[in-house]
Length: 247
Image 1 (cartoon, rainbow, N blue to C red):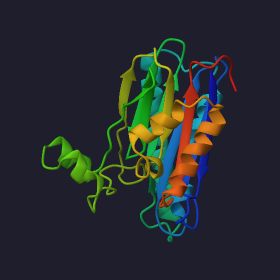
Image 2: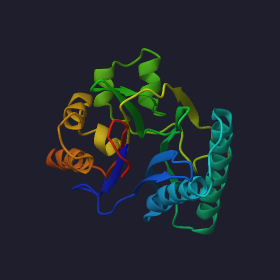
Image 3: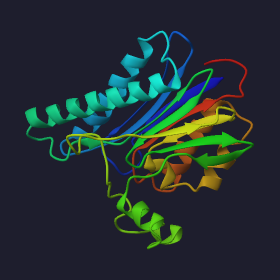
Image 4: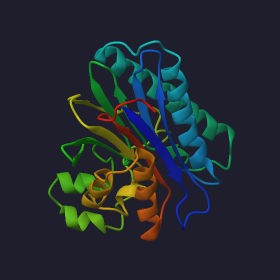
C-alpha cells in the first residue's frame, strides 16, 4: 500500500482552515482524516486541527484498534471528546464565533474498513477504476435531494449548498454517521468540498487512474482545482491499496 495526503489554501481564501493526515498504529492499521473548519478569526483552522490532532494521537498510540465494534465505540468516544474540546475552546475565546469543523475519516485494518462522517467532506472507495461515494453530506441541500424536492443538477448550484446541518462544535452532542464497507477495494480517497465543488467525479477518476506516482496524482488534483479558480481550501487523503509497499 502507498498513501499520501496534501492540503492547499487555494487561490481565493487568505488562509487554510482544512486539516488532513494519514496515520498508522503498531499493527499497521490506517486512519485517514480530512477536516474542514469554519468560524471567525481563523477559528476554523483551530477546530479542524483539534479534531485531526486528537484522533491522530489517540490512534497512533494504540497497538491495535481492535474489532469492528471496538473501532465504532472508539470513534463515538473520541467524537464526544473532540466536540467537548471545541465547545470549550469557543467558550474561552470570544473571537471564535461559529467555531466548528467537518470530519470525514476511514479506518482500515486487516479485517475491515469503516468510514465516519460529520458534515460535507467526502469519503470514497475506488474499485475497478471507478469512485463510489460512501458518505452522505449533512447539508440542507442534500436533505432536499433525498426528499425529492431538488434534483442532483439543481443542488450543484443551489445558493445554500454549503449550509451544514451537522458539524463538530455546533451542538452539545453530535453523532457521527458510520459506514461499514467491504474491504476488497483498490483505494480510499477522502477530501474536503474544495475538491468536489471544483472537479466532477469523472475528472477525479481520470486523475486517479493515471499511470503516475501517488503523490503526483494528489498534486495534480489540487492543481486542477486551482486552475478552475481554487475557490476554497483543498485537501486530499489517498490510500492506494494495490501498490506494492507502504509509504
